[in-house]
Image (cartoon, rainbow, N blue to C red):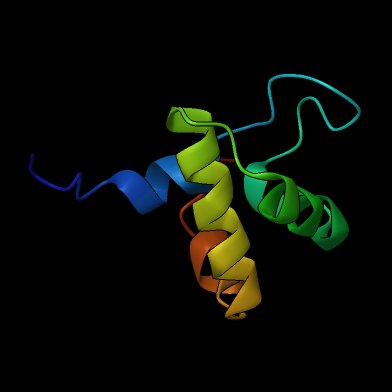
Amino acid sequence: MQPDPKFIEKVANAKMPFGKYKGYYLIDLPEYYLVWYRNKGFPKNKLGLMMESAFEIRRNGLEDLVKRLQNK
């Protein structure tokens, strides 16, 4: 399976589809929330993969680079 070259752009524009943070960009979710999911286990689907990527982006301080890809 080929990696999706636009995946980071998709992460930058993905929004949380449910819960307290519904409508928030994944990259803008509070850090504690992403850490909680990291400890609990991210969902085993596309959303989970994007949330895990958002966690890693935030953990490495790269959110400003990713936010430049948002379609605002």
